[in-house]
Image (cartoon, rainbow, N blue to C red; front, side, top):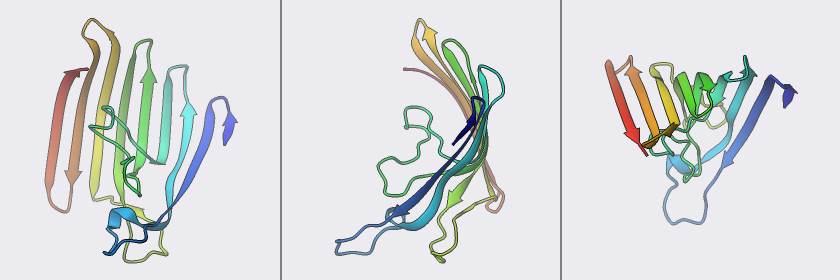
Length: 157
């Protein structure tokens, strides 16, 4: 629902089921009722927007971060994302927690795993002599397992 030119609310519900197989369904195939996306989008300036809430992330032509288009259930995150759009480049920054399926209690809405933080900055410039150049930093922290992963990459496509 677009409230104004600068503000919108978006929601999406998911019901995923699988049948007719001779084996039990995998967890990625079923989710009998879930809030897939529910976020607020606001445009702060002509090039700067902010998104808050449950959302899908897609970076690196789905090779890097994707919502799992090929799966019955899709991957979502809960948190914040800011995007700045220039003439030939885009800069995204995000801090989110992955949403995990609550398979033990199908009547309960899936929750974000606040023990796992996923964050990063992704820049893409399509106006270079090399073609499109993507540069990004990604971080993943798990407080329960006590680990941190950090990745810095620059690639030309």
